[in-house]
Amino acid sequence: MKAVEVEKLTFSYDQETNAVEDVTFSIEEGSYTTIIGHNGSGKSTVAKLITGLLEKKSGKVVIDGLELNEDNLYEIRKRVGIVFQNPDNQFIGSTVRDDIAFGLENRCIPQENMDDIINEFAEKVRMTKYLDKEPTRLSGGQKQRVAIAGILAMKPKILIFDEATSMLDPQGKDEIKKVIRNLHKDSTLTIISITHDIEEVIHADYVIALRKGHVAMSGTPQELFADTDQVRKIHLELPFALRMQEALAREGIHLGKEITMEGLVEELCRYDSKR
Image: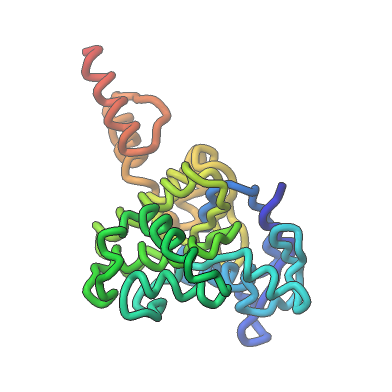
């Protein structure tokens, strides 16, 4: 089943130039999909369009079987959770526990059920020992994990990360990327990550690459990176592991097809053992 279906989606901020034009794609239920592109590519605009934060100029968006329109907007928003760039803008409560509880209170979850739910989702993002801490005293990565826990507690079917690592330091970025991979492994959530981080793409099931408001490439990470000339043509940088493989190949050292750092290390070890 398709979790998201987008057909000929077009949008303009100024009614003159289209920021997104004739964009068509679909996302499988339970998959982890990355939408990547440079600033101005239209990726964040697409995220806002498929969540109803912007109104399309033309086209069609279907979320979890419901067409996105005024009649269905409330129901769709109950099924979709969004993690934004700046975790500081998402805090409501005076403690981590209060913050995770905020959405549950809005859903009228009985008080006696809240603690179990809060503990369950704090554990999923490894923030249990921080439940009574003030959010302002947390690191950027920790704050973003709390934001994720608060959204997960609402039990959405689709979780969208809109440049959720862009304001974090390298450690914070790694923390959130690990949370995303674990969520994908351990749940039936459909995960959509809007990103400019090419290294995140490697771990996705499917990739949609945008350029100047159009879909420039799409497919699995392996399919995308098989066409390195086209990737460079749309001004995306290749992952470090793939650049390393290319450099080794120029020196006559040909490894396997793995594009992750872990895969590259394994291939180098195999190569070294055969020498």
